[in-house]
Image 1 (spheres, one colour):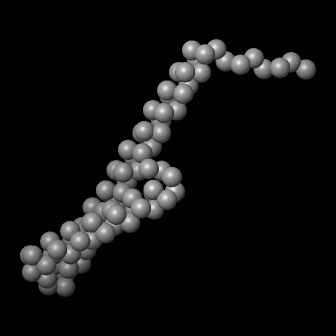
Image 2 (tube, rainbow, N blue to C red; image 1 turned 90 degrees about the vertical axis):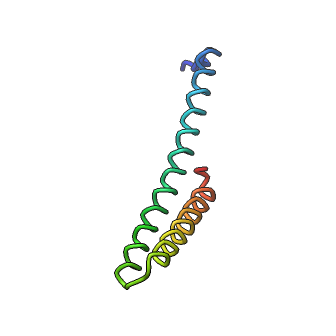
Length: 84
């Protein structure tokens, strides 16, 4: 039975750099998903409030409030899952 030889230090460092780069990319993508989810939620709230006859300021308030709420919720869940 043969034993595996440890990788050279140079390739180990390169692998660690690559892993860190991928972790950063995953964090950035998680934040983008959170913001886009908030944007979709805000747009839906804006559209529904417009359908029910809200004024311009009310539509903006509903859309903005929903954007903040959805984004915060998704980012909180991603943080608890260890994605951020």
